[in-house]
Image 1 (cartoon, rainbow, N blue to C red):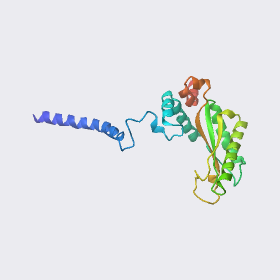
Image 2: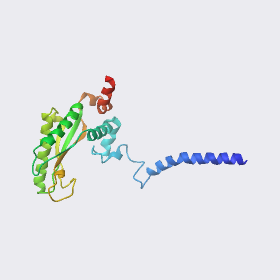
Image 3: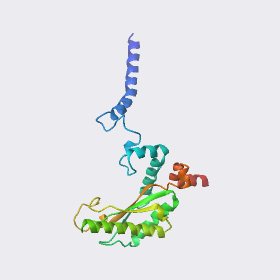
Image 4: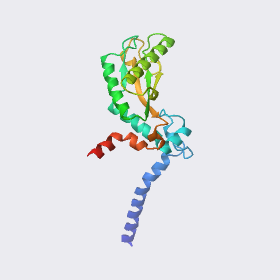
Length: 214
C-alpha cells in the first residue's frame, strides 16, 4: 500500500508540474492582467504602427503584417536608419549620403516594400517652422533615395517634430534630434508577389536566394 501511495503521489506531482505552465498561461490571459479572451486576433499588435486592430486582424492572417514586421526588424538591424543634419539645415552631408546608399541598397533588394521617412527637428524655434524644416529634411532624403534608384511611389516623406519625439530632451541645439528616420511601412499593393501572398519569400529573399545558389 505504501508503494502504491508513493506512486500516486509522484504521479500527482508530475501532473501538477505539467499543469502549472498551462494555468500560468491562462492566468496571463485573464482579466486584469493585460490579456482578454474576447480580444480579436491581431489586437495584441495595436501599437505596432500598422493600423487598427480590425485591419491588423486581416493583415496578420494573410501574412502581410507579420512579414512587414519581420522586414522592419531586418531593416533596422542591417541598415543604419537615421540621418542627422546641421542646425537649421536640410542639406545632406557626406555621412548622410553614405547612410542613404545603404538604405537604397536594401530597398532595391525588396521592390515590393514601401518605406516612410520621418523628419525631426530639435526644440529650437517655433512649432510651425520646425514642421516645415522636418518636412524639408524628409523630402531631401526621399529625393536622394530616388536618385539612387528607388521608385518614388514606394517612399513617403512624413514629418514628426523634434518636440514630440526628441532623442535628447533639451531646449538647446542637439544634432541627434535633427534627424530623419526611415522605416518599413508595408507592401506595394499591386505588386505581383504581394498579390500572390508570397510574403515569406519577400521577407527572406536574400536567405532563400543564397541557399538556392549553393
